[in-house]
Length: 401
Ligand SMILES: Cc1cc2nc3c(=O)[nH]c(=O)nc-3n(C[C@H](O)[C@H](O)[C@H](O)COP(=O)(O)OP(=O)(O)OC[C@H]3O[C@@H](n4cnc5c(N)ncnc54)[C@H](O)[C@@H]3O)c2cc1C
Image: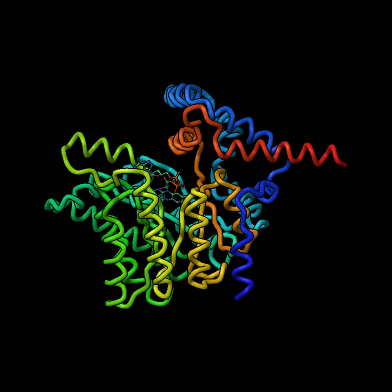
């Protein structure tokens, strides 16, 4: 027991030596240069628009993007290319969640292709501790407009019913493969106006496949004020019906769109009234999951240091060992290495979401990452501050030699 307490106390997210141990000097300098560029909001704004325009008119800018921002945030253009990054992360005891990040697909053919690609990831992950989980977005295998109609409760036409049955069957094929291969899968959370439909599909899959192990995990966005109640009701259902639940807790990625739509359409926003309330709900969600760890597998999907430390302290309070198989931390590849690497070094289970796909298809994802890392009110981002500290630390080390 003392071991657990001691290890929990020594985790520090300020240890830049550990945080950037995966990068040599050249890689670190390149990352520093990139984060400095992204720190300029005007540049990010203009760059995003120019990139989208260049792609639209067919300018060959793919190689420039691939060597810079793509390399920072993505594993590769395909599974094979991404394997190298998976191996590198594994050397630091960090697992990968390969995320086939192609967005905006709408045809039946595209949905089938995505399903097949996810099944390929599951095959690669089978018996491979470097890839402990996989993930999917339901909008990658089902039409958004159809999910929206299902969500609204409106009656589907016969054609739509058939289309929805096909989408559910694609989801079932993926989850069945996860079950047979013993590779759990996260179902990502999306916009609130399709999320109820996704929740029902995820619940059905958990009921079917989570009898002995949490194979299917759903995602709860704690920026929604109704999610704590949902979490409690899910726990009650699972206890009653005797299945296990998998929960990825996140804050939520669609804040502006959610508030804008609610305002435009005149309904109460599903979003918490302040960031502070989101933070409180996130931490409450963590406590509830840890207190029900006998039936829950939890992933804390966050870049927030206080929340990550909160999980550590709650585990300590509840006397849960660092490497409990039901508890994972996860960050996006290319971000918050100071959290990921320091947690892995302290013996916690940690993974990186590792997106991959053709450069052109992951542009929207890359633009979101660039916007997220832009300086707020001229401040240097936490990421850049730590990278700069590590560059200086290495320079000093060299001088001392
Ligand atoms: C591994 C992983 C998986 C993820 N999967 C998903 C997913 O499936 N679905 C999804 O939607 N997102 C997902 N995300 C993104 C996540 O929801 C957050 O957008 C992102 O991680 C930033 O939140 P944070 O906890 O890291 O930290 P912070 O920087 O502390 O929090 C920022 C977040 O706080 C919330 N927030 C900010 N301002 C306000 C405000 N005024 N009022 C209320 N809330 C506010 C927003 O959610 C914002 O994104 C994932 C993130 C990770 C790391």
